[in-house]
Image 1 (cartoon, protein in one colour):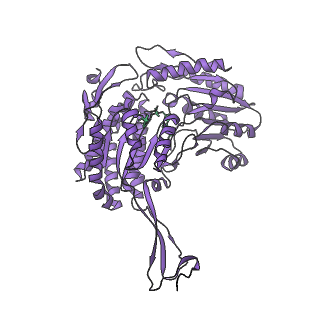
Image 2 (cartoon, helix red, strand yellow):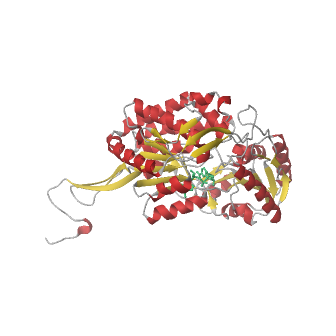
Image 3 (cartoon, helix red, strand yellow):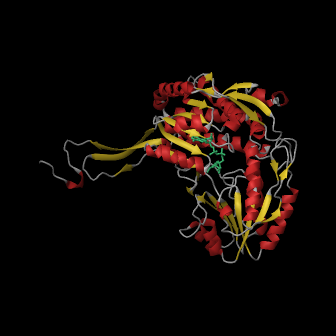
Amino acid sequence: MEYSQHAFLKELGITEENSGLYNGKWGGKGDLIKCINPTTGNVIATVRGATSEEYEETIQAMIAAKTKWALTPAPKRGEIVRLIGESLRAKIVPLAKLISLEMGKIFIEAKGEVQEFIDVCDFATGLSRSINGQVMPSERPGHVLLENWNPLGLVGIITAFNFPCAVLGWNAAISLICGNVQLWKGASSTSLITVAVTKIVVEVLEKNGFDGAICSTIIGPGRTVGEKMIQDKRFGLISFTGSTDVGRRISQVVHSNFGRTILELGGNNAIIVAEDANVELALRAVLFASVGTTGQRCTTCRRLFVHESHYDAVLERLKKAYSTVKIGDPLVEGTLVGPLHTAAAVKEYTEGIEEIIKQGGKIAYGGKKIDRAGGFFVEPTLVEINHDAPIVKTELFVPILYVMKFKNLDDAFEWNNEVPQGLSSSLFTNNQMNIFKWMGPTGSDCGIVNVNVATNGAEIGGGFGGHKETGDGIESGSDAWKQYMRRSTCTINYSTSMPLSQGIEFGN
Ligand SMILES: NC(=O)c1ccc[n+]([C@@H]2O[C@H](COP(=O)([O-])OP(=O)(O)OC[C@H]3O[C@@H](n4cnc5c(N)ncnc54)[C@H](O)[C@@H]3O)[C@@H](O)[C@H]2O)c1
């Protein structure tokens, strides 16, 4: 085991063998999970997952904790979330190192991921003093018509491997100020990060006299623990971040029980470089958006549409940029591209390359697995291919960028929208007519519609989410909080008469 080589693990309370369940107390009597370092392929440490009995115990602990938390005034809940943000600030370096070590993204991006959680905590703290309902004019004399928002109760949060810390934050910070108790299931392959983040969060709750079960965590496979969660009608919301295939299953199960979901699923994001674009700006954005996080962001740029007047130059410049990108250990300064997360992802990459060639694609740069002492490394890859090749319409969760030429901007808009996914999209242009068209009804059909900015790297103040097969619901900023609460419309009669709405006279 590599455990002893990484001194920062101790600062996070990680040991060689860790408990994978927290519900007010630590447990975990289930299967042993070996946590792998994708840079070396070696085991870092182990986590013991939870059993079915422990799942039920956890739900009972959450139910027991729910009323006190729901009755705690929202600004007080906001103060707890602020303190969680402070604790994350204090641990940002070791936590970011752990994210690099276990997930594989470079340190600077890992630090940004923890910062994102901190930012959402700040946002949610402010929000805890401003979540509000409307007061509407009543049509009846002596009546008040208003809406009131209450907590949902139990919220299930299931997250993906690629943002093993921030996605919890997007959900948890908002859900907590809304008065819910939560059960978090992270991806099994990032279990050490789940344990470390849980320790930081629950320490704040316990120090401040709250039951740690408010933020429960369960570690285990999707097909067992995840399935239990989605079939459990006691959850008022299942917020799921992950692949479209799993999201489809979750949608079917939860919605068949009339449950509520937030589904943040796969993307297939495009950047369009128009004839009048600032090409230098676009090139910088494309590089970050296509090779950043080794192509494993939901918002990674996978399709690049370049106006024919810039096509050859852009492709040449990209080839050059790709050839200078430093690939290696994500914890070493200067590395820009770390490993893929798993051996399975390397297989997805090599099989993807074979399929691309079968479908007429031409490898313009890269295309090969890198043999590097046990690690899961591949070359970031540029491909020339037709916009409507079937593979272009799927999400390969690896660093492969399809580069395509267009003549008319309207065609590029149409191609942006022709895929089943609808997460993020960017247009590089200096023409205001293009900008407003891009944002309007005949423009991009995505949830994130950018101009002269990359497809990735969203700010937390805006609502984050997509459309079509990317799922529904938004997380983080804007009015995402409404999804974590139950709206009630309340009519209050403060008169001594009983007028009916719509002017109905009943039995008078
Ligand atoms: N739209 C977004 O905001 C967003 C953000 C991050 C990642 N993603 C997407 O996530 C995917 C990559 O992540 P991944 O490989 O971890 O995804 P995944 O779908 O394989 O797993 C996600 C989570 O679902 C759990 N799970 C699996 N089967 C389940 C089941 N039957 N019931 C309940 N839970 C189950 C897993 O254990 C894991 O915790 C990509 O498609 C990416 O685009 C989307």
